[in-house]
Structures are given as C-alpha cells and as structure tokens.
Length: 327
Image 1: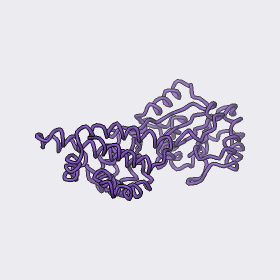
Image 2: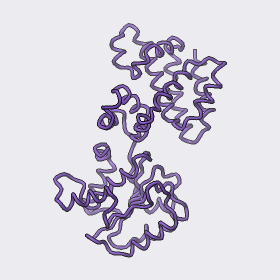
Image 3: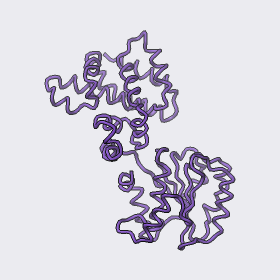
Image 4: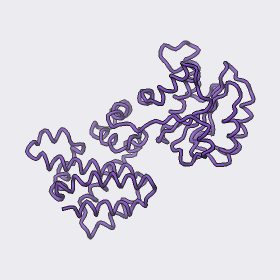
C-alpha cells in the first residue's frame, strides 16, 4: 500500500510543501477507501516530521515507527479506531493544542474518518482550524467531502487521492494475495474495484467477487420473466460500484469474443473472465454487436446515477432492459 500511496500526486505535493517550508496549517486528505484510510493518514503524517524518506536516521526511524503505532507524543490520532469524532474528542483536542510539542517544534493532530464527524464536533474545530497555535497542524482524513461542513472546507487545503487504475492496483494486490489468490482473481478484483485498493481487498478477502460474478452473469443472461427476481436479489448488494464494473467487464469480454471470433488465441489473452469463457460466448450470442457496444455507454450512465444516490434496483433494472432492447 505504501508504494501505491507514495506515488500519488497528493503525497508528492505534501512532501514538496514540507521541503520548501510551505506547509498549510490544515489539510483534508480525501481517500475513498475506508478500509485503508487510517493507515493512509499515518503515511501522510510522516512528512510533517521528516521521517518519510529513505536512509532515515535512528531518531527518524523511531518517530516513523511510533506514528505507525499511534504512540508518538507529537502526532495525536482522533477518534479511537472504529469510533466517530464527537464533541468530547474536539474538547480534548483543544486542550492538547494548548500544550507545547514534546520532542520538536511541530505538533500534528490526525482525525479519521472526518466525513463521519458530527456537525457539532466540526463546528468546535473551526476556530482552531482558522487560527491554530504556532507549530500546530491538522490532517483530516475523509472518505468523502459531502458531509464536511463548508466552513471547514474553506479552512483546509485538499489532498485528494484519485482512483487508481487496475494496472496500479494489481502489483499492490499481488504483494498481499499472491499466495492465496490466482492472478486472474487479482486482476478481476482490481478491475472491478472502482479504483479503490480497499474495495479490491474486500472482494478478495471475502470472496465477494464470486457472488458478484454470479449476479452479473445471471443479469446478462436473464429472460424477461425472471429478471424482476434477479434484480431484487442483485439490487440488495452493498457493492454497487463493483457490480456495475463487473458488468462492464463482462460485456467487454463478450464484445471481444464476438468481434474476434476468428482470432481465438488472441482473444483468450485479452479477456478478464478467462474461466467463464462458455458463459461469455452465450452472452456474445445473445446480444447484437450494437447492444454490446451500447452496454459500455449505458453502464457509464448508470454509474453516474448511482454516484448521485439513485435507487439502485430501479437503476439496475433500467440498465439491463435498455441493453436487452438494443437490436
């Protein structure tokens, strides 16, 4: 994970601002990955103390290790892992702000997941965010900015981690899962994760990709009479983005098979769902070339609607019906 995050523009920007002595007093670290948000915040905390590079001194190495353990006296984490940041936490933080750093001249307060913080707690921080004591910095980790108050957003500098490509995710996932998952499973989950490392990890660890794959194929091969029941079942998934991504891959693979029927070996190398070739051939036979091409556009539209909180079962039913109706 560290290699992946260190290559982001957000991380490089923070490093550059530290080196040029131009650190802002408060940052909002946007990372749409709740599974890894706290660990990502620890990684982004290290540049504040100059313990993020290679060939660290013994002192720098000690500080880096203490930050990872959340035991460094000048880098305080709020709230406790698994809890929300509330007014009581804001009060404790304000008290700590009045105390001088123990080991150096900087003191950093890290808050995750700030998008879950109560409005009352966010309001409590406003004065500190606007006029922090000398040497005090804030790093607010958030999986989304939607629930962050505008008054807070106006007082922080954004560090936004953009979605990763599947090509970027695969090496990171291979380092973690190469002994327990196949290359095909890792590549598939990387492609379906919507750019989120945590999303891909959750699919691999829980085996969710198997049930998602079953749902996706059932929807694509559904007839009119059984579509409502399939929509009801698939529409209850918590992995909406992943299911849509998998449908995109499924129709893409079927399109490859349909357009490269005479280049079998080449197609085998390019499709993601290699173990599902028979089902992919059924989809390629079921849909016209025009429908398979249209599916990519229709899924993109569905992804936008889901992003803006559309009712997922209805969105899914309309999507599948539109693709099926293209002749």
